[in-house]
Image (cartoon, rainbow, N blue to C red; front, side, top):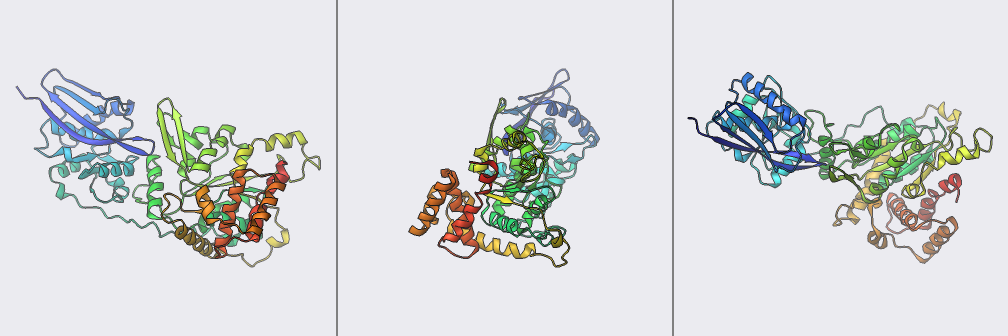
Length: 514
């Protein structure tokens, strides 16, 4: 009688944007034919039994006979998705003595199997490889289409395979697989040539505000009538952002990998994310969550821009959920399935009309009632407005200005000033963990790097008292003034810096009132 055989290999499952190790054990013993998978699998994992059995035969192997038990440990962690196809198939081959005697315990594996035995890409490879490296794994088997993002990590041997047969061959002889090439330099950015601030006629005040916002990572609200260029301005903000650092690129890539939005063959995201969800997007789509606790638009904009056009049209719950990430740079979701924390350090750019009918003075002109105006404006809460550093008026553009042939300043020129300001901040904030821009400074950094002269202190105190601003607004004014001084190449803060920063907090008083 054939002896019982046991094989083991490692894989990973996703929890938020993190990966957790899963031990795939397969036991094959004589007896009546029965195959079962245990360890809290979802429907996609249970269906893998049919894919694996057919793929094994089409790849030239034999399907298991007798009693086969597939265990995914730890048993209390829910396993989701088709990425367990490959590790299950390889462990089945080991348990049925079709691999010789490879050291499967040294391998991690991820991949979806086609019925032909070919390997299809899966999501979440980058965090899985990062976790495998942390746990000192030596080898990672995965689909060729996922190799570019996997090789970014370094320090672990990546074995990209096109099929189950090829993956099995690499298990027998790890040296037979070529090491894929990869680039860890995200600094080369190809901005779309059709997007440039030179195309935007006029709106010098709005451009100045966006330059300040990009230089310090500040949130901005654009308020103006339809057709004034709010969306056009927002779409060009990434063209004046500095290049991502390697750490920023890896963090952003990991989120897109988990969401399944990383294109095949792409190793690192080289452009800062620009997410512009429609106002009809569901709360889960914007914030994240759902049955699989997937990241939403807020997290997909990590280290980039989240553009919310027609801000009052978004759901109230979704808008209020912005308050935590705007303050902390992360978003914590508590659901029945558990609690996860998503990275969410982004620059919020919001746009809206000043009234439901579009104009600043439509209520006074009788185009809408004061009650309708108030209902429209009250869709945005005071605490959310308080977390937006720059409130910018974008008036209608003069028609004569549109006819002028000369272009405005290009994105390249603006980006040069932004990069110099960011370099000053990086030097000043060096050694402070996860604080890389003025917008992320806390009270300690503000007290140290935003020192006011007696004259500046009196000037700011008077303005705060007259405008009735909160303590949060006080700190945000100081951070914006710090950025304005950085753009001017100065360390000391002057009254003109404070005056310009305060000016960005007065528009909401005029529109919303005290």
